[in-house]
Length: 229
Image 1 (cartoon, rainbow, N blue to C red):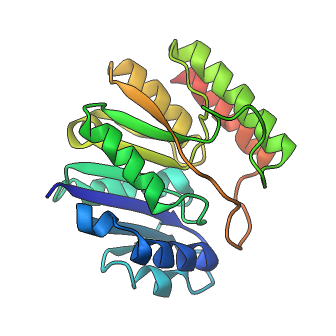
Image 2 (image 1 turned 90 degrees about the vertical axis):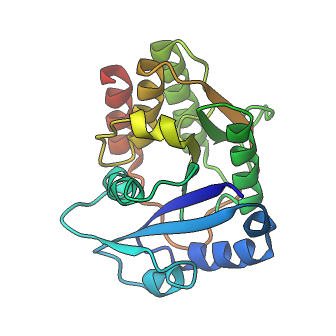
């Protein structure tokens, strides 16, 4: 049975994690693969996220000395490298993606693609229900710029669901500390000549909590990362 490590950065996402726990328990994914989790809990978290995460896994790491989604993923990947699994999935903690979608991502990795990401737009011609117009058009613009910069079409750059084969993730030297993580991944995929596949997945509104994304500020940081990587 192939092994998967699911990495989830967390800051005040108790509602999203409760949803994910119920979704995981009802999903068939644990019967299909050997699943392990790594949660990285931002030290500023002030709700019950850490307690909920501990119901998934014993690997609940405090994010100390750094802040931001990218920094949390870097810390988790460093931990993963001590005992690497066959596949790795980066998953948002807010409950907007399901484990059925994770299965779709891993299925593409099994077919041989190096990197797979979930997209909300590949088969959709409109704005997903629950997504603001500002975020929709911002993501589409950043996806277009990334497609031009990397000479590879990507429809959903800011997706919160990514999957990697072991060897592919080992080659990626991620340095971004914030929400420019996905923009850097796309650039590194190009630089390392890796095969990337987008997979249409279901998406829903976050389950409680507040988005940590600062639309204009983080949008500019993401744009800069696209150009620099």
